[in-house]
Length: 153
Ligand code: ZN
Image (tube, rainbow, N blue to C red; front, side, top):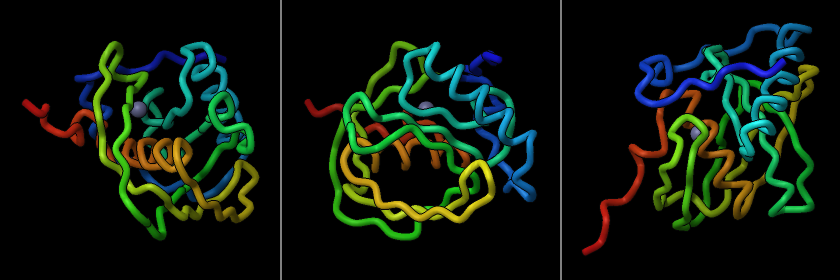
């Protein structure tokens, strides 16, 4: 089921999301709904807080740009290391019509669980690293517009 996406400046988006204690059927339904909502909106990532659920769950599908990475969901994702730095353009389904340049780590290692509660560890580079950092920021109540570098004149 598609869920409505909250948009800036909805104060709910500023809330830190709570860790998921038990990865159950409710989480799998949430993940399914998040994929449906993200695809309907043409996004490459979505955090649960964007559909009004303040739990640490994200979905990502960067496969149009990165064929080696199939779509995935992460529960309780955590960045355990960061390497390098890279600037890139970002947008967000919760900030429609706005793009900005954000400096992020070029590569990140992330740990978490899949939608069945199994431990997952992944390394992201390029657009995957950017999507992971952007979505995990949402779980801490941070929108990308807070990280946009000031315009160069
Ligand atoms: Zn976003």
